Length: 278
Image 1 (cartoon, rainbow, N blue to C red):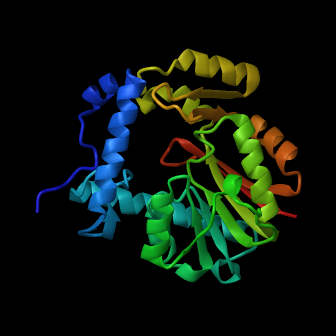
Image 2 (tube, helix red, strand yellow):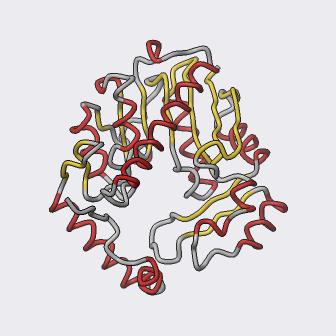
């Protein structure tokens, strides 16, 4: 069977379209609608994968291997984080993934933690619904939209490449909710773009990104955020220095204590932070 790509438009043409936010919004909506209509299909080496799962860029064997290897590496990071905090999978009665997408991480996590002990949420409701139904997890509302915010409900909460895209005040608000949702002794794991990422910002191949501005803001403020110019929502690229993260956590969730920090551990460009609730 020929490999199928989730990217229907060549990168060069896509960048041209992105220069017109209105045109991009129409195209993105149409692409998601097509993927929703197609639903999921079997992919060799994975199982069923949704057409809107853009983390799987193609069904070519090398892309499938990259997709699965990346998920496995992150679940290994979670396992190490638990050990560092004096926990293990058996002690995790309930875990929550914030920003689950279409289940790339849960697909691997469910091999180590039963699906009925995993909760998922995402601003893309279809992604959370698919992940929950496919892997036996429970879909919960995103914290910002929850009528009643969870309190003391989870032993592990993790956010992969979520704070890498949000402005600081959004991160503060979400982290405050995360701390509230953790049980005492619970573990929070999140990733950020740090100094190493800022120094190699050209890797993100964003035509609009001003690397000198990123570096200057990091040196001056310890923080930089720029919204994707082709999005209407507040969503873009974010960088924090280590010291800025520490100040943010102290402000938003002083009940969290840092367990570990590993610069550029994830995919050689995202820093991993592990915190435990006192």
